[in-house]
Image (cartoon, rainbow, N blue to C red):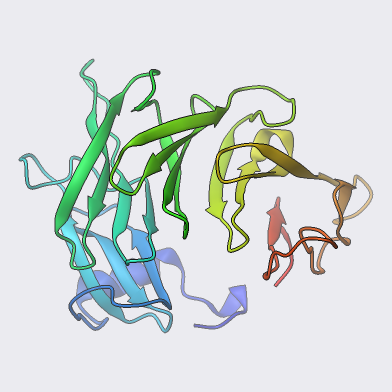
Length: 256
């Protein structure tokens, strides 16, 4: 798949290829170098593709019944054992959703589920993103409660952090979460125009705040260490984070 955005297929084109059976079907997720995504389709909404765009596996069926998903997942993540986690949210007719977070084997077999609608520990309003860490914790970002809940890989509740606000460690319209190779957790705090960095148990470490310059298309770094838009943003000059971060705001992208 091309690295140039104008050369990549659109989501509609990918869906058409999947539905037409053009992409290759294999058995399961067996290793790194795959793309796991959720499509708004009734049959096989969870799709596993190679980086070249070949369909290697799909599973799940949207419908009514204990063996079906009520809706296509909102978010998906994969752990070090290649198990797949999905947030499956539905709230209608005044009935609270249950089994919001679901874990599947690499073959797509259900392993466990947990979480219901609500604001108590272990409950969710709208889980928009999931991150499965390499150190044995699952992080679930709730876009409505503005919090991150921590779980073991077996669904045991461990705690939460965040809350709505503009202060350090608080969020406004959070949209994405990543468990980094450096043992840290990064949250895209969209409403506050920043990325926040946390320790594995949710302790605040640093923020990386940006503002779009009014006179041009550059992103201006308000704090943290980095360079202007359309260039590489290392997390910190002293950090041991082995990778680099890609920032995007309003169609303006920076980083590899």
